[in-house]
Image (cartoon, rainbow, N blue to C red; front, side, top):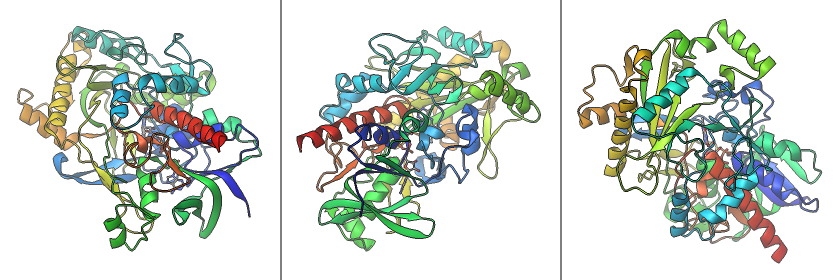
Length: 532
Ligand SMILES: Cc1cc2nc3c(=O)[nH]c(=O)nc-3n(C[C@H](O)[C@H](O)[C@H](O)COP(=O)(O)OP(=O)(O)OC[C@H]3O[C@@H](n4cnc5c(N)ncnc54)[C@H](O)[C@@H]3O)c2cc1C
């Protein structure tokens, strides 16, 4: 019977990094289990294809929250990648690492060895940076970080309006200072999405010591006493057991706590109620969830200043040809080409709100699919960088195949409400600046009849319209569920390495930090192996 050195559950942003780094040494055997399938579909490589993966059961788990009491009791849709590359195969590709303050907070929360100076080398190790060549960036890693290809005059006009609103230009949000506005960079290479499956898995696929098993849905971790020794998977209708010395959960911030709980690691009372044998009583599993909530401003504009028309009807053919032959045009765009970071009040150590702008507008149709608005329009969103609100993710039965109960508890603190309202005020002020004036043909959201002078009315709009930036973290936090080496406390042979271990969500998009922590986590595992 084969026993792997490492079994990794989940081939997402973190799991692909681990599979590559751990299998570098040929004497180490690694098995990577992924519930979804392969990543051959062009939707996963043409950057704009991400919109078509939403609510597409082939690539998206398609979760939703419970009714959110501060958001008019709405359920919020949460896409998550279910494919090689995980959410890095369906995300918006914006590359932002966060700020030193984030990692200082991690350290204070018990994550010893995760301060900025500890993590920066791992960000750099991952990166293949196209433009910035200073000691803040890496040029030799597998993860291409490249400039926006589809630059448009309206992007520069929006940035001029941000300048006019008092937000200075910043050519590099991952440099010494995050504050300011400018173009984002994308995890792309030559106009193609660069997921962790492209960056880390493709180069390692042919290694004899790495087995990649797709359509392998981990059902639970197998224990002997407190020692993890394998994983039960479901492939098709068949259950199978796979054995390993060390099991690493990289199933993401939703599925990792879910897997721990169905396997007997979680709050003892909760598990007993569901008839689950308690392996280790760990009440923090699934708690402390954080996410970035967004609110948006949408304006109608002229045809030529919106990409909406270019990606609909017959025009999509022209856009597709442009992508295919030149790797240029609207299909090279992920979510938002430009944006920035700014302060809602004086005295803050780092910006507390982030902005994204796109020269298009979308809506969800009746099937929950994302579609370009027929009307030419542009959208800007704001999100709070460091929310205080905390939610939870817990199983509702002993069966991993039942979706978990997700409570984001968005806007559950006064600071979070104040910050999103203040962030919206900054954004609305940007739209009031003269550079944008000639391009605006009427505000679509917030609706023109909303009295924007009133904070209360603005908050009511936010409650009715706000959504997620897709950044759930912190459900298996360092210092609470895992130790600083990312080993699950209270049991042996089990780690969690994915976005769930972040003690706080970082001040920016979460893919880069997840990749960094898998880079660092793999070093911890290899160092521990050398000591034994
Ligand atoms: C639509 C969207 C847009 C986003 N945009 C951006 C962006 O522009 N920039 C950015 O930085 N971040 C973005 N993010 C967030 C970022 O992609 C995630 O934070 C990051 O990918 C999380 O990585 P992870 O390894 O924790 O989880 P994932 O990448 O989600 O990987 C988890 C993997 O585990 C698999 N899995 C789950 N359960 C099981 C099981 N039981 N058995 C086997 N396999 C299992 C899943 O199928 C998946 O492949 C976005 C996310 C989404 C969903």
